[in-house]
Image: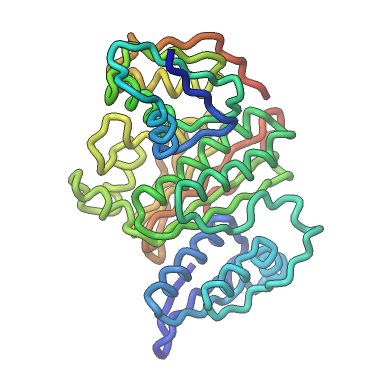
Length: 99
Length: 261
């Protein structure tokens, strides 16, 4: 399964584009994994572009996100809802929000 | 903050300011940058008050103005011991990489205090700084500081670029006031459904931490918190866009936080 491993801080559409462009080949109907184990903070624009690039632009079958911090998971969900692809976004093992 | 012309020289006058925020510093840096690019002579008058004068120097406004070749009387020698409350001195944003790097710096300094505030700050600062890189067509400036007396953090991002009315004219904005309201409600000049979320998301996150946002573009300024929008008077139009956000560190005692000066 093609996997995108996110670094500790992610923001901006260019960075999302660059990470997704590293996945070779046709993604149509494929599940793409996003590993957020190292992620500390992510921005809404990065989340929106990641969802758009994978599920809309490259027509992946689904986007499976693991270990996402709660705020980043919420950005992904909001973006997927706006783009009408929420049924193809799967988020597992949300990390709790620290204070 | 007035910019006036006198005998062919433009003067940006901070001398009578009774307090100085990150917003004033980034606004001054942005205006100075625009003058430098246009090769129009500018003189910046530092705040006359001793504390405000020192603060402007401590936040490196003087060094930024030196780098731009702008005449000024802001101090440039800084006692680093005085800088514990200054999260980020005035720094330029020229690209997405700059936006990310500066937001990471601010977030890292706040993280020992609060993970939640650090995450929110990262998201807010980077989104606002990315807007400069995406839309303004100009170099922007960022600054941030803590307000320990009220347990809060302020950050500001400004550019003297296109401004919201010019950016959103393709969406029907005909006045600065309309453009400011459209930007806060998530309208973007771009068609993609994922666009335009930066300002509303930033406002929502600041509000969740008992904060607020001040947005100034052209002749229109609004202080927003949740669904509340309070118009602010604008004495001198700002040639571009300025955002100042305030958030409270979780668990700190409540107190009044000024959002605009």
